[in-house]
Image 1 (cartoon, helix red, strand yellow):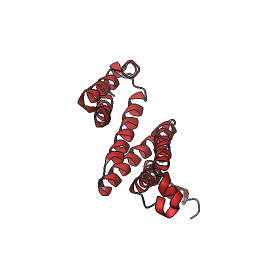
Image 2 (cartoon, rainbow, N blue to C red):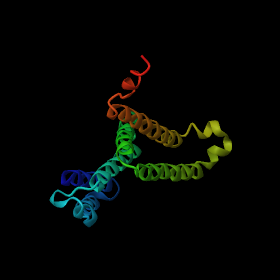
Image 3 (cartoon, rainbow, N blue to C red):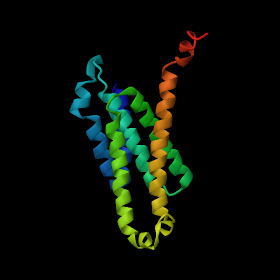
Image 4 (tube, helix red, strand yellow):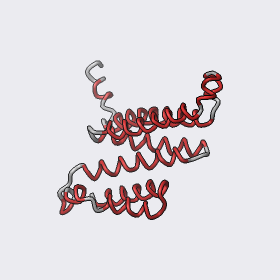
Length: 174
């Protein structure tokens, strides 16, 4: 359990460092690492799912932020697929998966509204001119990449974890 909190602290460090520098990264990592609600539920062998939640949510946010800040399309796609992978794992492991999913989609939606406002002149020229703007393409790529990879990995993990149980249900038909 403490290893997962440590890894969540590392993810918090890199996420905060992307926006605020190394000092912000250290502060974020320490805050996650010594947070009382995480530590109180994981010390001395008593485990709750809070450490898993922190680990998966921090890595979803980290990889999505890395995808958002990346300029190269291949790396952007890699990071958004990794965010979707962790989202898929989280969706199969805990009931509160939709909190971080909605948070990421809300952030993309707010950024899309900003892009619409910033490029409103292109939007007045028509939708074709608007969708030619690189920022618009990036937002749509992030949105659809995250949603589709979350769905794919969520379904894939569910089938894998069930041990391909659909094969045993065919036994009654034969």
